[in-house]
Amino acid sequence: MGLALGILLIVVGIAGLSFGVYALRRGGRGQEGGIGPLSERGVHVIGGIRMLVVGTLGLAAGVYLLWVAL
Image (tube, rainbow, N blue to C red):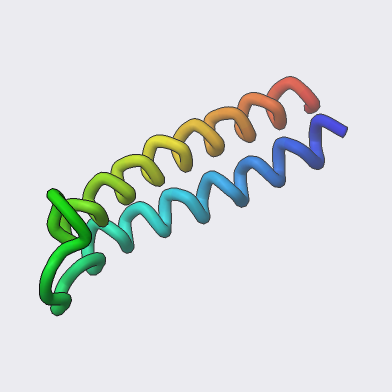
């Protein structure tokens, strides 16, 4: 059980890191206007940082579970 959950968390962590990097690099470019007090770019920066943090935590938890299971 721990092995499967560890692999799943590693995959989710890598996906989170990928989407976070994408949001930081490309998000909000070429769009006009905003959605309130923050610009589109600012929203993507906040979302990208949050995705990087969650992806890193998921990856670390998955590696830990694999280490414990093996």
